[in-house]
Amino acid sequence: MSFSGNTKSELARIIPQEDCCKLAELAALIRMSGVLQLTGLKKFNVRINTENPSTARKIFKYIKELFQIHVEVLIRKNARLKKNNHYMMLITHSMGSAIILEKVGIFKDYNNSFDITYEIPSQILTKPCCKRAYLRGAFLGGGSISAPEKTYHLEFVTNSPEHSEDLKNLINEFQLNAKIVERKGSYVVYIKEGDQVVDTLNIIGAHKALLDLENIRIYKQMRNDINRIVNCETANLSKTVNASMRQIENIQYIKDTIGIRELPLGLREIAELRLKYQDASLKELGQMLNPSIGKSGVNHRLRKIEEIAQRLQKKWDHKGN
Image (cartoon, rainbow, N blue to C red; front, side, top):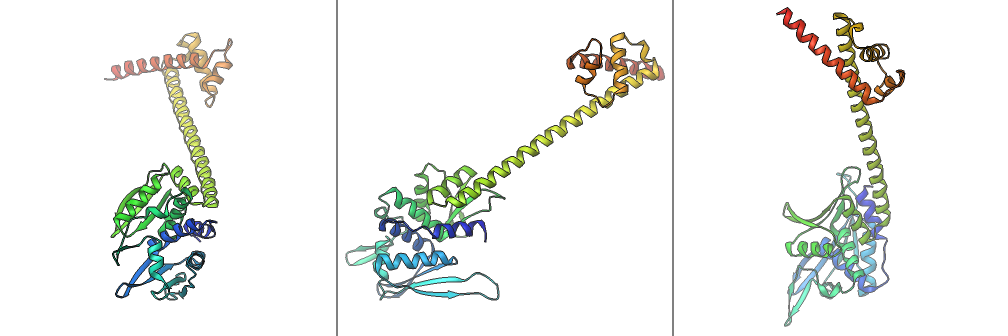
């Protein structure tokens, strides 16, 4: 199962103690994955679809406990495409769909008539626990999270701009930075950055998924740190090797033209050591001298040798012309 599927399975097993939280979570589930079917004057059936069996059981349990309604559950499987089972729960008008729709804030009664609303009803989000429950239901009904090995991205897919705006604002009440983007006729409320995704998982109660994501983040950070160190050391090694080769070429050029013995004593000593110990570092070369000198002293002498080699090169090039 995918990381997103495992997260939903974990969330589906969370059953709050308070009925207000169950109602808030059910409201989000119906809003995100429910479909209304008009069957007559002021008569609607509600169809709720999910691919997660644990989510289907949760919806069944909530409706039974909150409204004493036994939901009809249908299971469908697309064998040709080898997809997961689809669980469809049908609540007809005769079973009490209107009562449920009114309680979860989808129906509003206006003078013996009704109107369908798309905003999150404030009356079901009176407590912080209910707000967390609503976000949990929203994720179960229309959310997903990317595999953290690839990227950090969590999103909720909604069908109306009003609901997406309210959902974004609700998320941001927890000091997050959710944003909205329109995608193929849907409105996607999304969260990026590892820290924000972790905070969102904590808010909705997906603590196992949170720990798994944190472990992956630590592993990725360690891997990146190791790669950075290796790249840095490789670059330094290449720089050292290139410098050493250039120094040896300068000394060899002086040797082939005027001879190393023509160099001042200090320069001659370091030149002979460099030719003999071509892989030694500047620090190691300095320690071989008597008296020893530091890395900066060795580097200074080698620069002097390079200047001499360059002057000789110009001199011989001028004579050649």
